[in-house]
Length: 230
Image 1 (cartoon, helix red, strand yellow):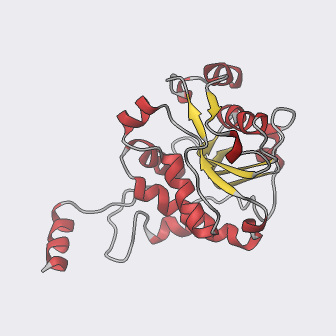
Image 2: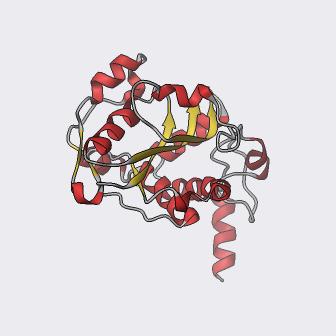
């Protein structure tokens, strides 16, 4: 009866791929098979690219930067990120985090990273949106990589304007300068921490959040994002 109900529901409200919007079959989840195989991957964990890493050169002492997919405007990855961020799909974020985590397992990051955390949203923005996609991405990564998760390390003190409205790196940096603080230094001191976000564009938000961790005694910062523009 339950299977019949879900079958009828899918006929009335068909599930569609979050990337290309084609109707999913019963065995597909969030993404169609075509998108699973054709989404543009950076493979930055296999062949590091300066185009991603240079975003932090001279700005933040980052141990490694890993980004799953290549972002282009109006492309499939942009649609995927929009669904992650604005369509109340925390389960999609965890799915993407777990998927990328399985690809990163070959690096044995559990021996190099002590803790995973997401870039925090201001409590009011999180209330409006319903969830923090970065934390759910971090949860999926944590489950795949078997690395502890702590989403309470950082706090965002100021409700800032969306970064997508600011085109310049300087504008984005000034928009979030000084907005992050560490809740408990004892949880950070001497730890190697992976900082997770959905997309890496200019790197300004991750730079400021990472700097707050380093200033509180974090020994190494890793950056992990689902997508990167370069």
